[in-house]
Image 1 (cartoon, rainbow, N blue to C red):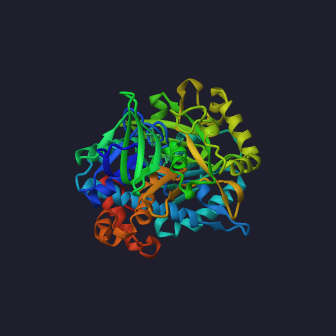
Image 2: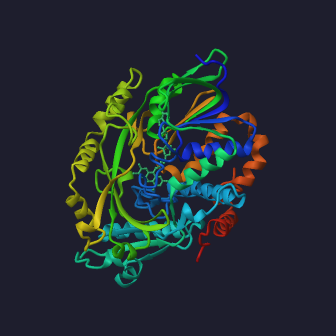
Image 3: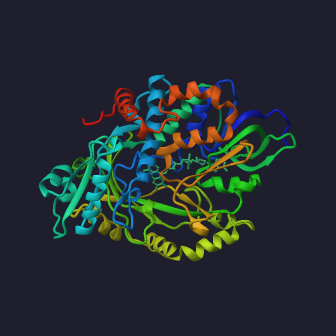
Length: 497
Ligand SMILES: Cc1cc2nc3c(=O)[nH]c(=O)nc-3n(C[C@H](O)[C@H](O)[C@H](O)COP(=O)(O)OP(=O)(O)OC[C@H]3O[C@@H](n4cnc5c(N)ncnc54)[C@H](O)[C@@H]3O)c2cc1C
């Protein structure tokens, strides 16, 4: 039991981008609150938020074809694309505020301008791309989008992809110049460095083992100090479970009814990383293709220029795969131990429904490097195997839950915020669109967990995120303002540049 000395206002579990974002919000809103972080690894941003563990796409639906589905009548549904884009605009505003206020520095170390492109092959896919272009390009959130099926234009845009292309199939692409590459690992580290300077207590090498409610309504967190081997107990009024893939197990420990009947399905990832500077120099864009039949949406192949450690790199993937671990540094027993009496039926139902997905993922994990390079050649026809190395990416734990639309055991590809009814604890599950929407997700948590403070916090929230509470689609002038501010503070292009 707690010795009463380790009392704090807020406990953040996990030092990834989500805890970093929430901690930064809270320290700006109520600097006097005591915030304590527990992270089982040696430093911040080492799991999914690490730059080598995710694709670094500032997801704003500029190029991801899975956010614009074709409806049965042949028209394109752009609802999801608008939602994801609006959420990213919140992140841009918050990051601009952080730089403008001097809370973090050197934005080029975490965000870089990079064209976002969608690439398709074959008449049917080109018809889809053209319809998508027509639906999006007139929308203020997607202004400046270009399309081309002219081989000469495409050669100018993506020489590496067009060179040596022997297929007779026609190719087309769309391009928006103000996409971004985001180094979420660097941003996470910057935010925790800032938080430490604001007296947030960082406890690395501390694994949270249990979370229980105390008789007086606080939460008691049992922590294993991995360095000393000692067990510590800490209490807080509010706990955020930002353990990434580790969040489901911790949520289950809380015993809150909202955390029941939920399971997790881990999907692993592998990237091919180019080691040839001449090849890297020939490409400058994030180019997203179409997901293969049977593939989950998060495994859409893409060829990405990346900026890591101030160096230009080139990555292809991620190839999805199956591993029972919930974290890259997790245990092979993670999946099995996540099955509880309250979610076993949900998990079994998902198992029966998702046989083809499981088969697909197992096949993917068995792919040799040569097979992966063969897939790469669909993007870069002249790709040489010796120019590419495999690196293991992070784990994504997709949420499985019972839904009205999908029935028992439905696999979710989005993000789920689970909170106790009294708002004293919140957990974040799922990983898509992921780190790009951390600001939107944390504002949702503030709304759900601190409703009594929202009125008083509104002016500061509007200073941090000027469009807070306003739908951008109904206020297009705000979109121009956001981009102008991001151009000034983050070094990004304005519209049309
Ligand atoms: C292959 C891949 C590609 C992706 N691509 C993109 C992309 O292009 N764009 C994008 O926006 N998002 C992308 N994502 C998603 C994005 O990486 C995640 O949504 C985001 O990083 C999650 O942040 P987090 O803070 O929740 O988790 P994490 O960064 O995983 O941090 C969780 C932390 O909690 C710690 N922890 C866990 N359990 C415990 C415990 N019991 N005690 C103490 N500490 C604990 C972990 O060690 C870890 O440091 C991708 C993810 C993957 C895997």
